[in-house]
Length: 256
Image (cartoon, rainbow, N blue to C red; front, side, top):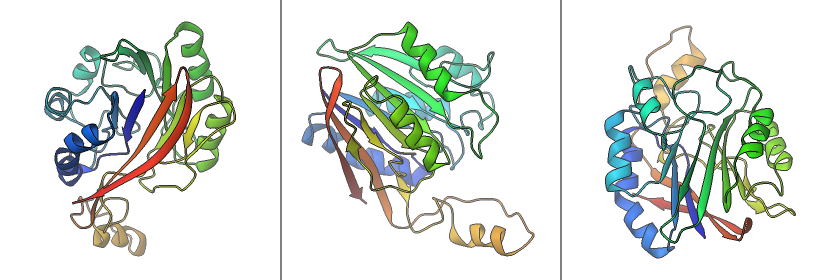
């Protein structure tokens, strides 16, 4: 099976990259399953129902994962509650709208379990992601298991990779918007990368206009973040599995 996973899609520029490149990428790599992190899709913060529906219906996205910005858009909780393919972190506290994992079938009949987790280091308060992963794996079985580990600390992401080694097909990182160079298949057959990187404007500070971000570091002012527009890059990883184990993971980058 071939699984394509896109890193955090940032604002309208990121959505434009998806529209421009996804049809070609799906054909070129014979993609069987497509996962996109969409927590920054709406103006850089959160996701709307309209965006999610467009991705599901028109771009062939199978699952959308999120993270700490999952509920930034007003009233999006009601859509999380009714759309199981739009995930929020599984280790959010009980009572949070929506689901943290979903199991779907590919066109060829293979069953894919996608799990969304969020780290706890320098992140909003949430439950233990390691125990949350254990709990899901105790209850669910699938041909392929993919984990989006949404984490600030590289150490926490790497720890999750080793913790789930041999038990899942892939652990891929999101959140920092900075692509890392550690794509590899761990000895137990788990594909791993600390952060896929964002799909959006790289002439920026993690997707936001440089001037606004610098002002926040250099002055006591807190100007409103605005999504940048230059150097648009799509970052993704392609994971190939054989049975439940990964046999390869490679980086993919496209520009607009």
